[in-house]
Image (cartoon, rainbow, N blue to C red):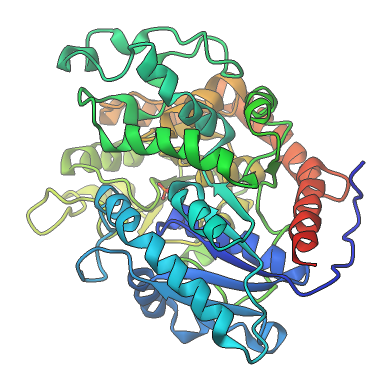
Length: 491
Ligand code: UDP
């Protein structure tokens, strides 16, 4: 049986952590990195040059300064992302990024390991690689170099389970879609009852949106199949940012295929305390300092927090509908409007005329915030979210119910689980008008009814999430087991 207590590590292992260069990936990776450093690992954390530039701009050099506590033991390195240079203001195109990193990543990683192994001066040779599941090719590079390699998939377990079955969707003829009508004619309601471990009643529309293609050579389908069929089994183990009690059925099905799967989530303050190497941050934007002060002035559980993550792009019309819906709902709100969130407006989206008067000081908009701090604040009572996995898990961990407006990828899967399986969410239609936004927010924040039921469920999951990462909990023990396994490989 796994011990709850951290065990001593025999020799200084050196772990190379390589996240996919997007916000939702670098955040959990940095937490894992801090957790490993706290357990005696020498850590090298790899950013792309582009993200390094963004972090420098958002936080200054301190974002890379481990300080006296981490001196010599926590370093940052950069690799190119393969895309032409671009300005630091817009979120990169994730499709282009995916293709570019696959082209240039293997050589860049090989060169980096060779360089680190020659570095000397207190830098131990690289003894293990933890790469992002979206960069599965790194496993093969590591293996060629004789290194143990693990893949950390940052989506949910249910999302990963769906990706593990993409090949079956193709073999059984569901994907590619036969023509454009499949996007609208009810085809998406086709039941998917043959994926072991998936929640009962799942439909095609609940699977990651990358299946919604008519192209037999679609890049995202092909890449996902490759990552799951070839890269995942080649890895020494799989890490997931989730916990067993939350996704037991899905995780059993994943472990039936990949037994050495470590669930280590939620990667939160218990695993990587905010005061541990506090200057090291992964936020690509600078959070607005007004949030905490404003929240301090609001009544407990009264605020609806609205944030669609780091890559969602919406139209001007959708923004107008949310703006007026939030104004009409009447409760205090904190709405994060990323500067690059609307790309179709002439000169960007502006708050509609007359809106400030209608809101009358009840809400604020900011460009970016420290989301975990906002969710943990006692004033926050609900989260209107795009259901990115980090957001979903951070909300569960904070005991905050969700109003779900999924955008793409496995966000639709997370939404379905949040609403049907975990009971913490209420789904909003994709084409949502201001009246629906208003009604949904009112329902979420009400003291009775569906919102109140979701709030009670969220409080239960909060307890279970904390149990999972406390000593003796499944994620706590999995992390210690992972540490021992990787450290053991060094000696
Ligand atoms: N985040 C944040 N402030 C913001 C928006 C997002 O700190 O204003 C963080 C959030 O806490 C989460 C990550 O960015 O850790 C977003 O990841 P998620 O998987 O939720 O969505 P994605 O950005 O990948 O769509």
